Image (cartoon, rainbow over all chains, first blue to last red; front, top):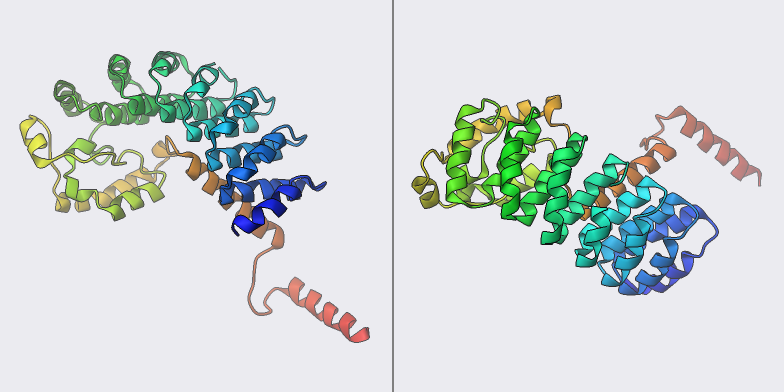
Length: 104
Length: 227
């Protein structure tokens, strides 16, 4: 896997099958290509919580500061796994904006 | 404050990574009030990462905690402040407290720098149960000699202790590693995923020892011949 796979994978994020979306989010987090950040941010609003949490983990792995604000919003998610993933990702991003939401 | 202790733990961890002085006081508050053991342990680790002098006092208080692993975590963190006066105090506590002794706990400042070879740290990292002996920093021989009460382990002594520690750590006392990075958590997720997949696909048996598989294969062959 590598850079040529990024654009097809981003398209696969719109797949109907939840399993596909879940696996692709993980794969994009491993490739660490900054082009994947925006589609993954959109995925933070997915219906299924495993996908939301996997997207948050992937955003933490890519380490692009653009994901900080959406991840802070994901800290208010109703599912604890998603909040867990978002807090973990914010720790990986190491951005000072995340401090106050994390304290709360 | 999240109601889920897992989330609180990761939040404390994240604050430890971000390293902002604003988060010191909320962390100290959490150390005093949080009901979950693992959250408190992680909070202590985070305070150690922030390395703020305001946290020294509450950390010294948590050296008298009921739980051994909390004591160990606090002692480990206090050793990282690199304050000679603190080390003197800490060494006194270590002398008095039975729990804070090898093989439970070997203070990192007692280990010579040569011992931080990569394979030891890798081995330590690969065993999440050995939290009392996680080595964070090296200290020179001169530093140990100038600090009264500071014991410098030689490599031989350390190797002698090693198997005892493993045996000790396998008990339920140290059941969880206190802090992990984002990468660790991701690799754990990946492990879970491969485990789940292998569970779904059934055990991979070479040869034809699996009767169900053999039957399927025979069935497939039959169908293949038919068409």
